[in-house]
Length: 439
Image (tube, rainbow, N blue to C red; front, side, top):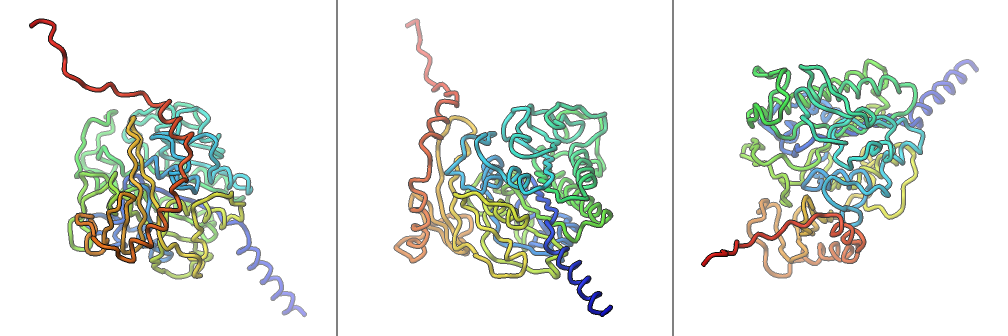
């Protein structure tokens, strides 16, 4: 009887540990492409903490974002393709539901730290479901690295000379997980590294604790140092979870918001790889995805399924047991994290329109592992022509397959969004020749 009671007790403890809501941390690096991670085949940078997470978790080879920061952030946080809800650069429409709302509704303590760029309202993070926030580029745009200006829960805050923005934000992350270790928490950590300006970090030989301008000490040689510091901050957070005894039941996801910034050329699998941020070639939207969840993922694996940044919201909700809204474009990849087949994508659709000014130009495309088709008709073989130099001719089967994907979104753009964009965006005067008054 004692043995049976012991076995039953062990079963209850084991079952409760796996059925409990996991803590969830989503880390997103800024301007950090797939080629920058050593575990992916990168040869230019030191990423030991990311490599270790990949070795003991899951490394995805085909994760894709939008080619630019705000478009990705909107898609990531809402689970919808930009065609449905993207207004313009620097804006997240305030009627949208985000994963912050959904995780909070599921009983999670919610926090966000890092880069915002989704609306200048003082209450923006809290409006979108985050209880606590420490952000850069919320109500203003001061320096982000040496001696930065940040917003703590919407309040503008200056820091002592010698401080470093990425460290301050990482400190907030450590404090957040420590304060909420007794209940499930969700931390969204959109890092400010490794975006330009490429400047020294506190670990650099030429670090200057007195500068307060992003116009100084700019040199692409510092990009490698910024990558190393970003990796160090991830390792610091991972170590804190271990110290608190909550690492096993914490799902940690790491990705990038778009390709590496132009001007930073890396070595990748024996060849030079120029940063492609802003481009609809794969160098602009192929980003790393690494997942670590020790309680569920027992050994390192590599996954080749297509993943869109729209897929994160349903994945987080599935892991948390949260309700998922209707009308999403994302597909949960939680089954793959558990070692199951899941529902892999056959293709990814992209509607890309930066709208940083009054230019409404759109690039629309669909792609799978091998081919990419633009709405304008160009079809490329991504294996033989990754930089999309020479369109294929003829009616290949790939064209018909991807055209079906494009056709699904022909009428998906709400006309009201474009009217709102035209109304809200100041028009740039056309340049013309000055008329001579005197003859």
